[in-house]
Length: 53
Length: 319
Image (tube, rainbow over all chains, first blue to last red; front, side):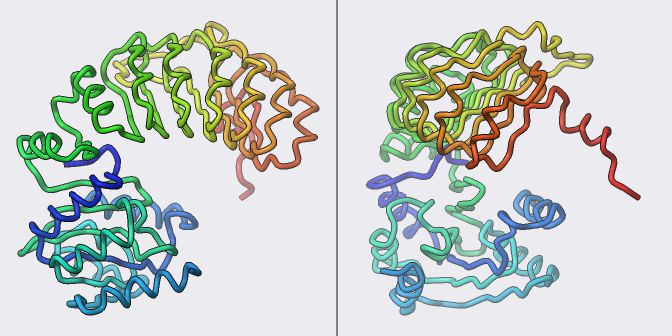
């Protein structure tokens, strides 16, 4: 279920506690290409498509 | 602390909980699809280096110390897009910060219970098809972002003024015609976007939105276009002037007003020293005002009566 916006402050902390207790691991990353800013139309299309799928 | 040092410091602090590092090389779509299939997570959508950490009280404590909201997890300040994976795959919680996408794997009933317990957790419930319920929850959870559409509104409720923490507001309601005074009491608003079929005008009270950076108004917009729907001619659009008070929006960086009967721009626009993007397209402006030439900070200006599509047809690319 989508959030309208991301929780902040105390709500963020409570959500992290919930997520920690309901998950096995968490992921953080670094994209190789900031394609959301500088990508070609094809790249942006691919990224949006991949988010949907 | 320099950004680079902070980024590295975060990964070093989390290193005791590191389970796995996944590297997906550029242009290796097969590998990307394979990883997506295994984890079934929003975390993997492009080439990159991904770090998987064990969930435990200590690693959770670090996540709480390092950020104060999910959107803080963005490069180069921090590694990005914090996602929590369930055993067996799938996200319990995901974030795609650049897309302003956040979500949790909970049912409608669980979401309602969570929102009762956690003030500031604002989830998109089906019950929010009722605008009163949407506003109740938006006010209760002090949201900083809101999108209103599909409620067949002819006017915005005055209680919109109670959304005191709002930074971004987008309203897409084709029958919305008048903007209430309460809207201009939202002093923290940085981005206001309004899409409607027609709009009575822009009140002088717009000047009260001192933190506004982005203002976008697009007439001839329909949130439920029926077959054969046609926008009224722009000569008949009520919005026919930009109030001179617009010049008091000192923070304004982007101004878009499209498809209106506006024929001239107020010279007070020149006071907008931060304005970089000005698009008053598809209106009735005959020629570009001279004073725009003095606004050296402008990076984009469009005051053409034509749409971008019409302009493209006029200037086809050379073979």
